[in-house]
Structure formats: C-alpha cells, structure tokens
Image (cartoon, rainbow, N blue to C red; front, top):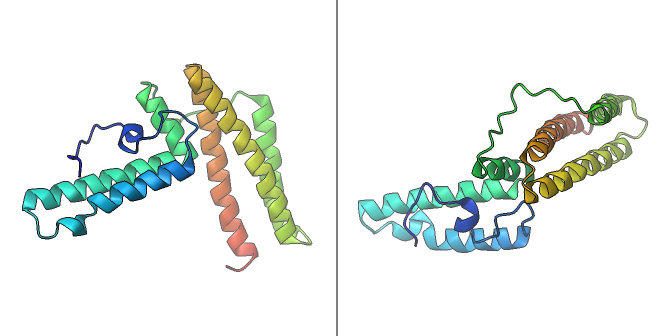
Length: 179
C-alpha cells in the first residue's frame, strides 16, 4: 500500500491520464485494485499508524474515484488543478441560446405531470437533457484541452445547471411513477 499523501493528484493516484476524457472502465478497474490493497480491514492486526494510514488512504481513493467518475466534479477538479476558481454560486448566464434551451427544458419538465404517457414524456425529456449535457461536456473537454479556461469555466457552470435540472427531474419522476 502506498503512503497516504493528501496532496496527491487524483489522476495520478488512479493512474489515468489527466484529461476530461477518461475511460470509465479503466477508472473503475484501478479504483477496485487500489481499494483491494488499501482496505482498512486488511490492516486490522497492524499498528495504530498502519490502521490510520489505511483508513486515510482508502478514504482518499474513494474521494478520487467519486470526483473523477462524475463528469461535473471531474470538470471542477481539472479547473482547480489549472488554478481556476470554479465557484459558480453567483454566476449568471449571458448565453441567450443556453438560456432558451434551459427555458424549454424547464417547460418540458413542468409539463410532465400533464402528459398522457408520463414514462414516454420522461424518456423524451431525458434524451433532451442528455443531449444538452453531452454538448457541454464536449465543449468543456475541447476548451480545457486548448487551455481556454474561461470557456471551460462557462461550460462547467452550464454542466452544473444541467446536473441540478437532472436531480429535479429524478424527483419529479419518482412522484409521477410512484417510486
């Protein structure tokens, strides 16, 4: 087991390229390999320091995986590594095309409860939402790769918005379909 290093880059820790585009299968495989060797139960008979190190290292592996497996969290982490502040708490969108797209998605979401076939309407909504998210992921990936961090940051903000909308849709879905 490696020594716990709280400043270790998550991409280096999980041995995947530092890029927005990561192989989910490689990421998951590497995560499982690392957790297998670092799991605290393997060090139950070890010294206090070994047990503490195992807990910290396992926690770091979990955090790295959770960060890199999420497209939005991965984008924020890449921006952080590039020295870009990704706090979007006071962001307003100036992109009229994106604003119009969001208004249409919100309207589509609000009309789900009145749909004659809610499941089909949900499927259609998720297709539209996925298309918008995929577009922003592509924009982020290209902007980040070209070190156009202002454009990457704007795309990240849009990804956050779309992720929030997905959460709202999932709540609506559970209400509509009685989950």
